[in-house]
Length: 90
Length: 205
Image: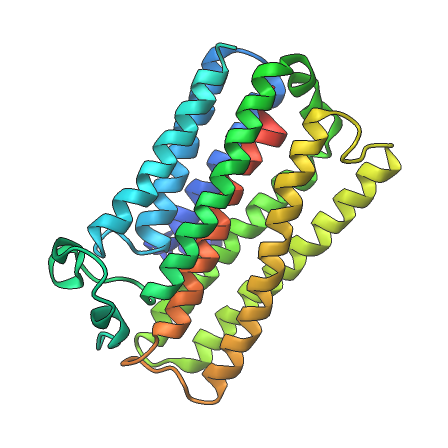
């Protein structure tokens, strides 16, 4: 009952934090259990991009702010995760 | 929030980049110059990582298995939580609730200290296992990236103490909080860099 009340009282930021932590744990699990597969690297790269976008848009609050800064920050989290995918084919 | 004069007076960017055309700049322009410089610096580290991984794939495949993954995961959770605390601090200063704002700033500062303690312990643990920056190419890149990030968390934590001092002296309010917001976006940038560093050195094989 107490847990349900806590979940009900959670705001947007709390949900984003929970999602970020869950993705971190999932990434670690994938890396530990299914080492050196291309699919795992692609999944990890995509989740890194997603985590970056959440922090940029909702914690840094760039979603409704300067569009150039938001573009640059999001581009950063497209380029380097893409390199993770490229490196999976080394 | 009233726009600080510096945001409008530099006059070095195209008009389409102005706040009127492109939208509000969180914090102030100087902190964004700093943030973009730091991003460039870390970009060089990441490029160095990918080049080294290309030339030494076996070493980079085995490297993460020698690290204390649990400490890396814990530090990731700690930094993400600290970002959440910073975002909460910003939301409370906007409604002029300085007591709650200060409380969340102290929580963010605590997370910064916990991160530094865990990282120090991890470096010590590596030394006990016989690993150093000279062990191989993976550890050179690992220390290069993580120690640099460690320094960033260290000085940002000191900046947090300064911001708490300024808050207590009445420098920030719902109307004027650009200094606090500048540190908040810088703190989030440090968190973002860890989001990239973590999978590179702890997860990917």
